Amino acid sequence: QVQLVESGGGLVQPGGSLRLSCAASGRIFIINAMGWYRQAPGKQRELVAVITGGRNTNYADSVKGRFTISRDNAKNTVALQMNSLKPEDTAVYYCNARLRTGPLAAESDYWGQGTQVTVSS
Image (cartoon, rainbow, N blue to C red):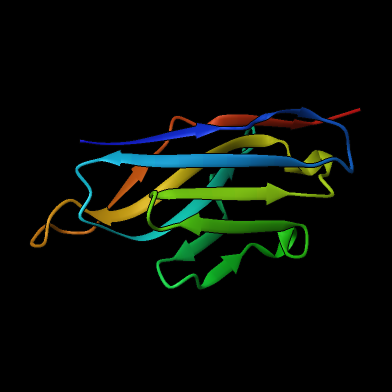
């Protein structure tokens, strides 16, 4: 069993900042990548940012320069610092971990329960 627990969502005014955190625990052999996705009402879930074990990062064009993803490999945590937030950033944000539970196990995706981020005045 693997659990991903997110924290840090909430309501913020346009131009404000929020920091999301996610901790993975349980039967984890290796985490190859961790990331954040979001889903707004009536839209498909989309990638926000991802970071590999080697700390290579990839961001959605819509958040480049405003969001920063970071990772602590020793603690199996990932964070998303969100600055200059816009109303269109409003969504449920989901933590993702692509990992293996054992040396011979296949790589699988695990998801957190989601945390609401609302950007509104």
